[in-house]
Image 1 (cartoon, rainbow, N blue to C red):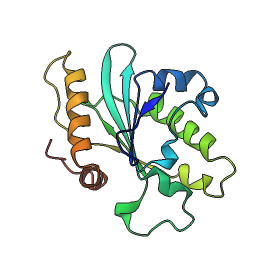
Image 2: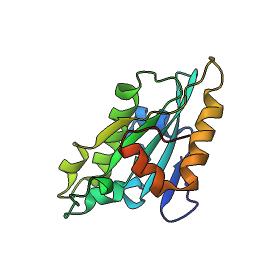
Image 3: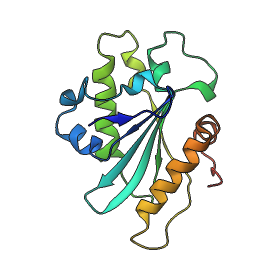
Length: 162
């Protein structure tokens, strides 16, 4: 369940990450990139073999920083980029948070993980039932073109002009 790392700031997890994570997050420890060590992580998600969407983890490495900035643009958060705005939070976010907590065990900053903001991004919506994969790729391409900028836009929870 490895991840590709195009730079030292971005990790891109493979499409099996979430399904493996749901089964047993402890089995992934040491087998993939640690999202707490990268500034940005992208997780493509296939929900019930029917729908694709993207989860972006932004500023996660700051979770282990004892001096979290008061600057809200530097706060860790999770953004869901879903072209159908399906209700995905419980099935996807909970295992991600459990995984992050497991990775941070032993850190005095584990309580920061429990307060991570989850944002449902305002993104273009598909007009049919089959273009979700194209939208996922588009969201990833746009995000990767300037992660810093798009994290700022996503955190403000405004339209990312995508």
